Image (cartoon, rainbow, N blue to C red):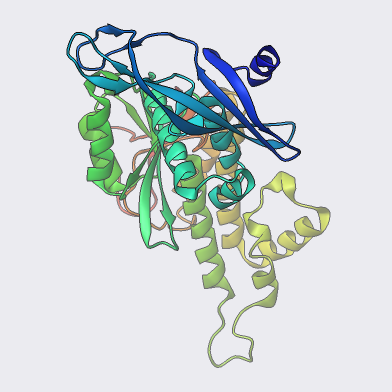
Length: 386
């Protein structure tokens, strides 16, 4: 019986003593450590003399669908050097659970709620939550120890925008490095201080949403890194500008017949935000009629499409061509005004998710040493390889 049960348990350094319960839905096995000695935690002396034995119940993985419990006959050793007594430990048993069962609970918690895992395995909610937090701490420590070339920074809200956290991720692997309470300069600065100056010197590119507090922390702790605005926020700013143009054009004077807006222009509010290659024939015909009636809307829509082409370009030459066309439309003065949101940097970046191998950034440069006059800008842009 002992040899058979040892094979079924597959626990290194554990010897099966006897099977206490072997029923249809339950299995209880008495086990003990195969090692005959223990090292004293006080003086490090190797102890062989057993003072007494105590039983400890340890949960293990289910065997053939049966709930399995191991009754560990735990020995208490007496140290002949310092005259202290201590209970033996075992690498396979941690906190009343086997290590493989703890890993199974954490793995199930990734796809199930903590309550569902506790109900399924018959383990307490707080014990499973403690295992998940301990595993999260180990994963965070391992991820943050790696060198990061591209760093992604953004904020998110939890509990219906009553609490904000700063999310820091690695652009090289797409893994989350930290979730820091708050969204100010101090939150991001605390992360950089914890990482240390050696780790910060390895960061070459930082992608964020253009927040002024984030930019201040990045300039202070990552002065040599290139700060890039992510694609999502840049496109959102220009789509908001296009939406403002639509609102200005669709309003009617109060003395005119209701409705107070142009129905055709109102119906096209979502179609205008699409890329040109995603439009159907009916959408293109509808937009063609609107552009004939509203030339200003045509200019704003063309500027947004050129912005899309900058990010979707396959090489630097195509990106620079799209950037020149976008700059020409921007210089015309008919493009929509971009609302400012919590600060804006001078570089626009390609993506706010995992960065591919070929990246581009848009860096505005002013022609000459003179300041541009008010009104339509005289700036030009160029695309750089990161």
